[in-house]
Image (cartoon, rainbow, N blue to C red; front, side, top):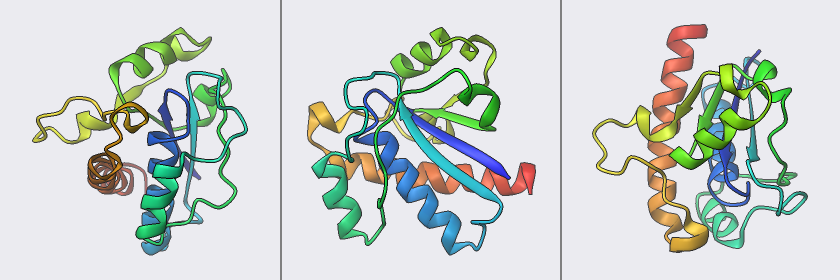
Length: 154
């Protein structure tokens, strides 16, 4: 089973959106038995909370399930468990490398998968309020990542 972990700051906006979008795409391609997805935050202040209302509303609009999703913090064991660790921005990539085990992990930024985009980081809608822009970037990034996984690992 190939596993993917999406990481943002609090695990209530960007990374759960990416988790839900990627799960939906995996299911649509009939790959749910081959690829698993999770999300986590580098910070601990939202542990146990459901995704942000802006993320939930947007996912509802696209009929993408986020059922059962609760915020959690990245743990050392994540680095040995996940095949792909995808950070939403430079700060989270840097924070991941400070977690024991993270200094050696291969971490990719979602925007590195989208070289034609002007933005180099997925903006945090917790601060910007622009969940639609984040969804667009995540939706496209998940397509690219899923194609990469299928080509490299399946």
